[in-house]
Image (cartoon, rainbow, N blue to C red; front, side, top):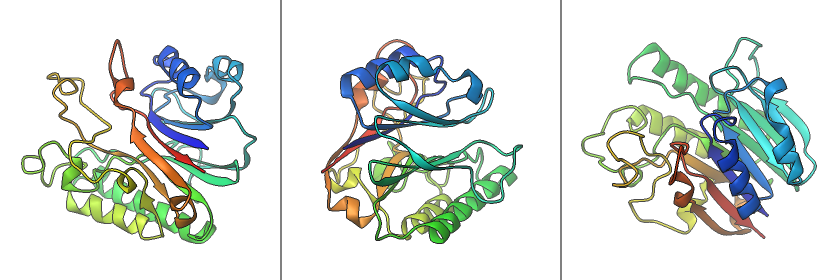
Length: 255
């Protein structure tokens, strides 16, 4: 079973690229973030033509998450507990292929020390609370998406210059470690320990061509899926070409 995550940075703008990637890679599940479209306007037909079912949770212009699966999806939950219609659309849970899949788009935080940054840390605390209240680390669960946190210095192209800045600050990393302490492992790091592996590159200053990026898109799994994981990679090639998302897909295969 192949499960992938991809911040598509507008599903309508990137639709040909996303559909081409699905047709080529044929993942069982693709979790998308930053879809930037209300549910009624989501472009369902091209996904359905490839045999994918869809669950969506979006809003106009900003945020939004969607999950496409080749298998039935059940027990769909949208948002974190306590959120209302006015809150950003950032979490979509489904069960598919016998795995609980939690698709998240963590807030950016904008600037370390700001009110928005404090809200990001609180959001991650509430995400951990949802895991504790609803799930067990002994069940097959994957938490994946754009975490907007680079977990370690090896996930940053210049950890000295970027130390303490947004995505790389210790409070963010500590909040992510607390989420992972639920009982989650980083699937990509099961197979690749080295630096220079990124999933996001700024559009400016030829950052992608120079491989000056951050690894902020993660696929985190409980121990039952660690035992079943056969590979996990960043598909850097999907970031190349005309009008790409600034993120690359990350995927893992499970027996």
